[in-house]
Length: 242
Image (cartoon, rainbow, N blue to C red; front, side):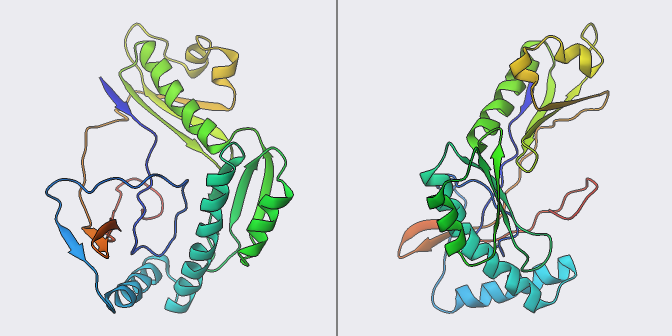
């Protein structure tokens, strides 16, 4: 049986900060993956290269890519602080699609004064959108639970994810013989709480596949594992490059 967990966002030291996700605990590098040790000017040189690649991929100038990176760096720090200190309130974050544009922080319930002060201190003009119905952790839990519930109904090809900008849990399910074929029929078998803020799509095509990818090398800082080096990912699905 194939399950697809919530899509993971892989953060890299060398990336120009174009995606923000809730902070995750650092793990150990894969066995046999090799180690790259960064010394001296390699960091700035790598950043310059990455900014040029981001600029080319997005149709920006290098200066615009650098401005976007600066915002991502500053906002990323406060975003991690808020997620760590207010896990029940942190509901996600998003960078602007425009280079150097104001990012957005999503908050469950009313944003408190301390949280607002921390965001303002970043100095990037971030917009705080509060009164969201679910925290990031709740969205993650709801997505995983929905995946398990759909599998429990007998579906074998299930992908679930969530959109923190809309607080919506999304599922795509491959139809199976002798099981409900329409989304409303499937949802009727779940509780009212389980289907709240859920969007379900039924399809005859395969939606999950067993795949693996490897990229980047382990990067050490003073002899200790810090992160992985940047690596490019290209998707064949419609939409902007990954």
